[in-house]
Image 1 (tube, rainbow, N blue to C red):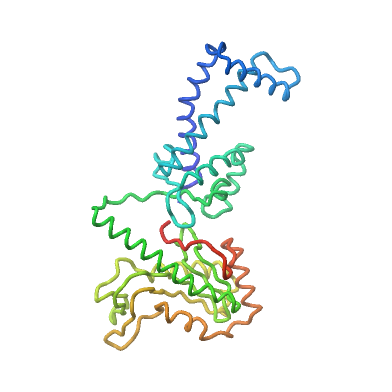
Image 2 (cartoon, rainbow, N blue to C red):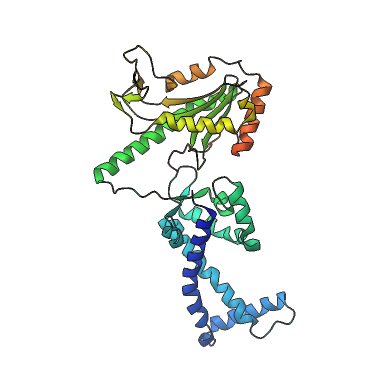
Length: 350
């Protein structure tokens, strides 16, 4: 995630670029005083100055008009760069990009408009509201980001893809989104049985949690995987294999980091009175036994998920369950989903 210094530097570059246009425009205003529109604008500026100061100096209308020119240049600049290019020129110099917090897609024009309009509030008192919200949001979001549902992230540069690789990546991305949707549909009904269900918890350090469940069986961290094939566990190394070959990533290491962070964030969980388990859920693959006759540890398919979760209900006292859920809600600033609510899409891209 970008640091506050990165955001400040990007803003400085953008301001300097706008100034390169603003200064010549302001300097060109005096020769245009004969223009009917400019004459009307100067008169309106003078009236505004009178409303602010009882006896403004003679140069006040020109200053007010010069200040009024700034948003006429800044608003289109931010709309075009953030809304069409995904980042302003200042952000691009630092490898930053604005994306939707819900699904990781590039910032759209509507979101860019909201981000731009809220710059007025973010900039009050020398940017104090922006600083406060960026520090308290956990992922560096200012008021404009909160209103637009966006977040500024650092773009990771990789090797360029061939058309075939791009098509494969697009297919895998669509399959991943479908798998996460299916898992959400399967788990959301748990809310009717006293479970608190959370989707799309985002964190810049330990990664994004697809789903967090708090029920009478304990606390569960779920990571949805849309891979196909037969998944088994290597009897020698314990690594997961798909059709005999290892996965491209160590999914268990990612889950272990998430579990460690959730555990360290809850004093009640640290007592050990509530079970905490991290699970992989394959929405399209099948599970198989290895040479020792064992199925993969902490790995389930979608059809096994609900029976497994509800199999030990009653282990956790309801009052204690509510206390743990409330603690996690305060730490991650989240609220449980309810059946019938659209919720936030599960995110695994940012």
